[in-house]
Length: 380
Image 1 (spheres, rainbow, N blue to C red):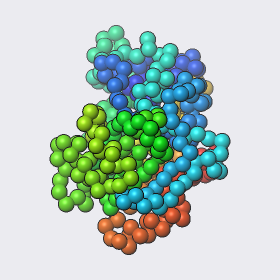
Image 2 (cartoon, helix red, strand yellow):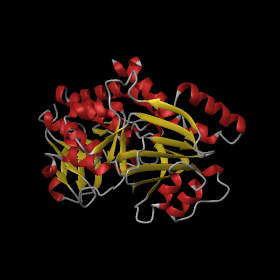
Image 3 (cartoon, rainbow, N blue to C red):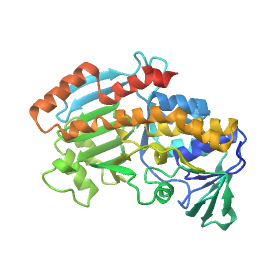
């Protein structure tokens, strides 16, 4: 059992790990380079396996009344023509929940009881591997010194991971620009909706009766004109021809904060290197196509904390990797697979085949969720 742990990052992975370590009575500190609690005003989608994890963690009751539960997912073309409607209350999900909520709400629930453990405005400066520990320096001198274990929970573009594997290619850029935002839409009456164009897609997830979390992406290599610096203009240009609720959503963007990014995933999952462990997106960041980022962070955090509570550090790290590696690799394949549609959907034949597949099997994310709920690898 370890006696001294430093967690880098106070996001979903770092906070959920800290909650588990606290339950097991393990000693830890958390550093976070941001100056205060997060102000990310976007949303987050939690499919059935993520909800199962937060129930195990014991924070689900604290979210009561602050999330929107989904009963179905509608998948349609950009012109509004419905291809498939998948019910999320049918087997194998009859005993599960699918929810969406504000990211801040989730993080608030994860921070309960941890406020005094998080050192904000603290950046990791250097890491040196020693025989059975890690020596670190950071911008808070009180925390400098040796730790039995350093855990990187600082996201897909983890500085800890990049420093540790300096010079190695770690991230796969899929050539998609993406946008996330929350928009006020009183009495919208919507359920989750995914609309698909030729090389772009727009997803809508209600997070309250009057608020929508929206995510859109576009494959850059197929666009006739390059995107510009103005995110609102890009959204209107890419999705201006969409039907359904999209025209009204785009008209509501004036006072909306839009988060711009790129669709990326890790080239290969990494769970530890000597006395540095990786969890969440820092270990296994994948594309958001099947909404598995939070689920992977929760499950990985629980697995790592459980191993640390039962074994010495080196044994625990091996156990963590052995329990997570095959599952994570398969989930990343599931998450990246739908991206091929956008790369190969330029012909009418390719789009027609894709539509037939969706009509028959259901939306790609729901197909993946069914596999996760029934595949023996994930159920044993």
